[in-house]
Image (cartoon, rainbow, N blue to C red; front, top):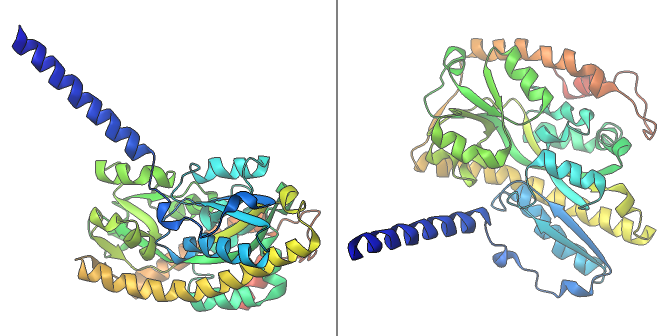
Length: 360
């Protein structure tokens, strides 16, 4: 009898430990290492800003760099309470929180941004803004870039700047050396219309999935590949399961820094100016570091045993040709104008294509 009771106790203790471990895991990573070196309780304004990914990405660390610099320049009037690591939930969920004013800001990924700002889908179109150099060129064109950043204005959300998380490619469990290999992969893509359309035009098998669900899905074989950037895959340890990376470089991944317009308008004109200028300076600096980080992560991944591939010229030509369908089918959404737009081009996408030298 005592032996049975002991067995029951052991089982209960083990179960308790398992449940406790689950609770601890669900709590997510601690932000203790990034605590501010000042007392934020004295701030007149608090701005909760969410991001889905890891602070190991320079494009994400922008949130903390912005927090500290804005505190100095605003003389302690504005505190950016930055919440990375999906602490506020998946991006679609957080976008809704931002629109309602439950949070004040977000570094939203370019792929998820189209849910409230279809014009943001411009940067997801294949082989249009597909390098760090082209991204710098696009951002330097005030007329075209400012219009791009107005994508969510009609939703009560303002866009202020961008940072990068690298060039998109394919991290896979099995080698992908050709289009035929890619057709056998179950690719996780973001919950975004442009990406779904693109992958279907390529004849692939896209599985839309929130980023927080990816680790388990990858381990369990629900997906066998990721449509993502090398930097993200390396920093977030996806190469532990997906040991192969095919360098497609079809688009630049962006974090677009957006804010609730009603909240922003509670700031004085002087503080609004400080807010914008500070974020612009930090973002420009981080974009330069983004490129350096990708180069470093490539070397780290190779040293860790990740095998890299590129497709043949013929396969790349096929991807570009088939991918142009996304340009054509999504043009109407990207070109749509809204009451708040200051620039009203007849064909915005065509203007960007011409400026970037796009040829399908």
